[in-house]
Length: 295
Image 1 (cartoon, rainbow, N blue to C red):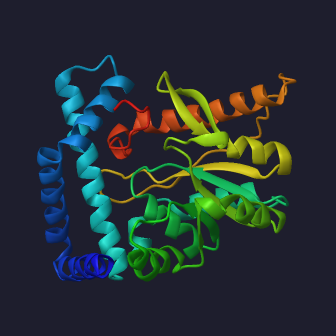
Image 2: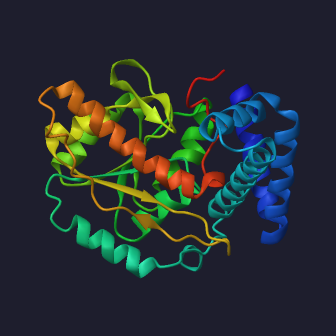
């Protein structure tokens, strides 16, 4: 009963706010984000801790501005997801430099016989980025976490993520699906910026702090040699997005003979790239996640 009630409330909320004019929807989501920032202390306190740890040189006022900016970013992202769910977002009008980006992606992937792993982060509007690629001829096996509400997952989340050709798979099934996709020269999309655990985790630096990070990308690179391409979609000042594609990462730590050391150095390289992008657009990363297990 609870599952059905939660699904009904979410469905109703998406429909109701979707009736608002776009400008009113953005304002509404920003207002809700401010309420969460003020009253949901567990996440806001964690956001401050993360920002202080990542930017020890910044003062309290600067950290506060970054925290507010991060919540505003999430509000904008949620508004746009609602627009996407209601088929009210014009993808083509939202993307700056689309042709240049697609030309680079085509050039990088033209000889990718062992498949492509696109790595990205919970950065800017990551759901829009995940749908932009299949809409333009690059469907992916997209790995994500299974939601707690099975009805919401089945009726809303999965259809939303698969609407343009992606295949949504969960972490529990990830490795087999990824290997199959790579052997078929397909694309895989992975968000690798959150804390990992278990045998597939390794400690490497992220903003100078130890961070449990998935080692799966490095392991797959060494075994199957897929193309590893970091892709992000920074939000511009005009509210649109300029997709950012970084040259394929071919680094396999050849200077090391020990496999574990190779994996560590390769994983560090991926984190370094993520950190560089996030430092450039600090408000656009998901600082509410307990990345360094600070609490």
